Length: 315
Length: 218
Image 1 (tube, rainbow over the protein chains, first blue to last red):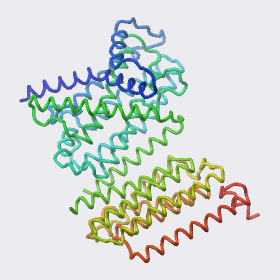
Image 2 (cartoon, each protein chain N blue to C red):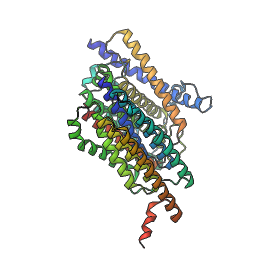
Image 3 (cartoon, helix red, strand yellow):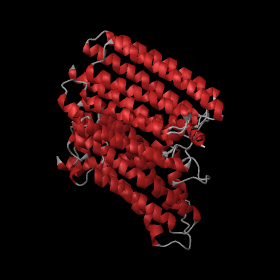
């Protein structure tokens, strides 16, 4: 049983790593189709990653060891999160290793090192990007924790697997106001954390207002590939959190091949639906002015606060 | 059955409150108006739900009046006014957006705190929505005192009225139809009077910024 569980953990992480670039490609392709462009094929990001891994690395002579270490820290912390998040099945053997707080702080660790690496070579763009990223992260991280706390309160546990299992056992909870408000809050934060449109523009690194792209402007070769892959993985993690925490049906509770096949198919369906929503949203709306970003994030913070309040008082 | 009823009521009340909060984030006057219109539509939906589960046929009429008056007529009049004043934007409220959102979150918590005895005492399946209605009342009061344009203040006042209607529907399954009709008439009259005021303010100052009224002292 435990051996199977560990094998499943590995399979889940491997699946997430494999699917992540495809998810980014899918969002890009859908967006291109919506804007009447032909668009690059969905598997384009795989070729890009393969190309970047073969290229040589150019590092600024001002850069210290931190600059070289940061991509590995970012990638490793994001991969570690995939072991803790319920992507295919619950309960997992690593559920006891870390709960939602560990997930939030592992993600923050990656963000922190990326900002340090942005500051390290001393280029003005890197510093600008790092300061913006910290502004966004400082507002977004508490909201992630608070939004999932709203679910944890009604499930009685901060363990992500337990939350999924509880929501499956009690389907009426999925439409309770606490869950809906928390979904709204987490959705806004997902856009902020993964650098999607109203907050950051993922399509370009030619804008003065860019956030994520400004930080990684100095990177090249395999370092850049690791960072891009980690960013894609982060998108997949947030999408599967949105999909599995709020609409848990499909996640496998028994370790049979049939249930796991259903879990893979339902995961793919949820990812496609969320990718479609994000693509439509990115086509419909323009980027916010940088000074309005904290306002949007405070909307999501208030939503999360109300979600916690209503789950706490309406238990 | 009862659990479905109370779930729907809480859901509707949260949506009504949510439209009140959306309003705080938006800036354009037309965005304010459409937030108010959607809020009224959801409110009339909640009224229909209460009418269906509470078996009260008069409430259907109330819901229809709500939809007609606050969902269609008043938003249309408001839009006409906004067009006439060249859609002035609420660019600088007295309290900035981020702060006012946090303040309104706290106001909703305060609403929960003060309706606690009421919820504890009540046996109705709708009781869980009452704190949200109280929160909406407090938030719309905050909108009225923190915005500068007369038009946005009027929207705040109308939202306050929505909050009161929601509290009445949830707390008592609606008041008698004749009283409800009187309230609707009051709202319409109040709105018309405010409209005249706004026209006068615009005539005198060529702006509907109420800060200009301070000049009257000198």
